[in-house]
Amino acid sequence: MKRVIVGAHYGLRDWLAQRVTALVMLAYTLLLVLALPRGAFTYAAWKTLFEHEWMRFASFLFAASVLIHAWIGMRNIWMDYVKHAGLRLALQIATILWLVGCGGWAMQILWRL
Amino acid sequence: MPDLTAKKKRPVWYNLSPLNLPVPGLVSIFHRASGALLFLGLVWFLFLLDMSLASEAGFARFQAYVAHPAVKLSMLVLLWAYLHHLCAGVRHLLLDIDIGVDLPTARMSAFGVFIVSLVLTALIGARLW
Image 1 (tube, helix red, strand yellow):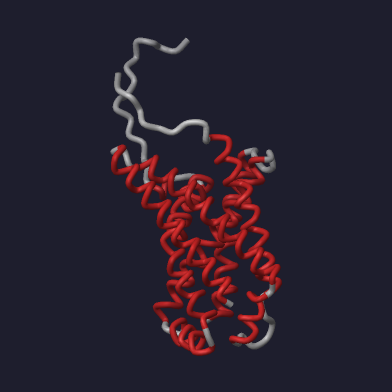
Image 2 (spheres, rainbow over the protein chains, first blue to last red):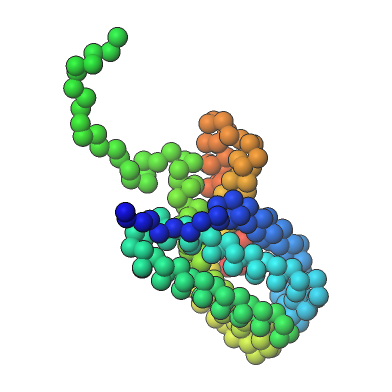
């Protein structure tokens, strides 16, 4: 028997995660638009914005949501177009590593301030 | 009663060109394409954020960097991708809770996604340029 290589038990969880992370990113986008410095765009105003504890908290949630959301989306793209199981697995692993690395960089940017 | 002996014309060639898709289908494929583009742009966005928040000198370098027309154009494309993905996403969430699922409304909202995201991109782009 030829086995089809797929995962299991992630359908509803990912469906829900994609929507919850979408709402988090939507809320953060609106928050950012409201919180953006009015008037001259200077380093001081830009830095002050991201130094607030609540902004750091929100930005971290946003970054985490991007990682999960992008993972589900990219995995769906790989599953739809890449038929070779080995290549698909390699691309999926590369996507995870890439996203986790990006998440680390985002944290470093936020907490270095 | 239909004539069962009549031969159906086969093969049937469907025009699957994206230009032939109904508007909701176009929104759907653009949702995917813009998402993929945002995934690719993610690291560049982090690079920009890192530079702008690093120091006073970094901020000055950031401002000089984004003054370049090619950089501005790329940022505009990513901004459009973000806004289209966001608008299409909101439409998707509304469809999930059974709002606007009938065909005329779904077509109108799909059209609206294109209009709103393009207008917002133009407005924000004009301010940034």
